Length: 507
Image 1 (cartoon, rainbow, N blue to C red):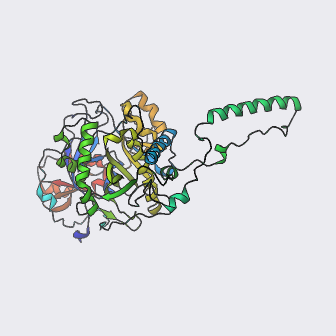
Image 2: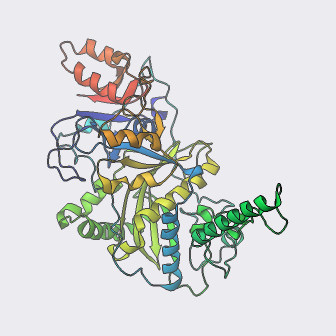
Image 3: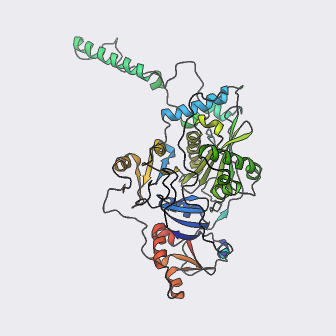
């Protein structure tokens, strides 16, 4: 029976000294609680990020917002309701122009703000016992309800009737004669760009209204037949293009470049992942040195593997889940047969969570950070058609105190996570509070608390000598144990529900 169970196993490291902040560069200003995750179910990680946690490789950390120099608030975008802004449309047009005409945008390179390479501390120096990795977990009486994990090693291609923004459907933006794209996107016209005339049209409308008022004064009630009160304009008649239509806009047959986006599971047994591994490592190193100023030793193959390949998430699939399954993936952007960017993502029960992006510095002027986010939002929308509850796109952390990192708030509608009640609130309600204080409680109801707050630490599960037991039982066995305050802190941070499912390793 135990063999059919999938558990999350962690070692908690608490919140020690401060470490270097990747945003304001304060050497000792960044503080967080952390734990090493040997293995983790996607549901447990979903619940943890909904309490402000985030992973960097297998290290899972939660910023101490009241203490850290740059408070980091979890942000999510409502993927289904997302409408691209003018700047987003401009980025998509820039990419399509590059693909069709072959010229990179000239002038100053778009200095896109990006997440630092490691938002949390590096791998803790504490040696994790090998006993954890090979623990033969036995059943216990008060076992928390844990759903069985069905290995998701069968990689399927996501196929949908709507135009696909990204993943294994091999959407070729420039050369593939895609019938779905041709049918879904409006035919290109020769008229004026509808995004430019609004200023002139508004002026014309004001003239019309002024003329109306004058004629109404002369002719009494009613509007003369010669005057049309609100003459519909071409922009009003046509529906705005969807994000999918903008991304899949048809390009000329003789386009200069071909772009393909592939979804590859982070799995060294996967042929595609193995075949592209060396190219991905080289691209990562080039990006880190050029964009973040890393030394070669800081972005070597072992660091790449630790940071972007070693994931604690166990691949899973479910009858009501997406066909590609849940787990960690690399979204590879192939331009003319070579990888130019990779978006690292986690597919979880209710969201696609963005982990990191690295790209070839030569293409920095294409705003690949924003472009990949738009593709990932599109991908989330596609997955939602297969798994209705998967409808959010998590962008990591929103850092209001660091102006260059506020760009994540441009993907609307979006919510920020209240650091005290762990409920989501619209970002529009949160920003005025952040303008007044770096740290703030977003939920303004003083009577509302944490619905999953720790109530009984004795029910928290621990793994001791290959046996799962409640912490209360462990305490009785280990008379004189002095770790109660540490376990209390850990369980309070993960919440009662997770504490009763996740196994906390005890030596």
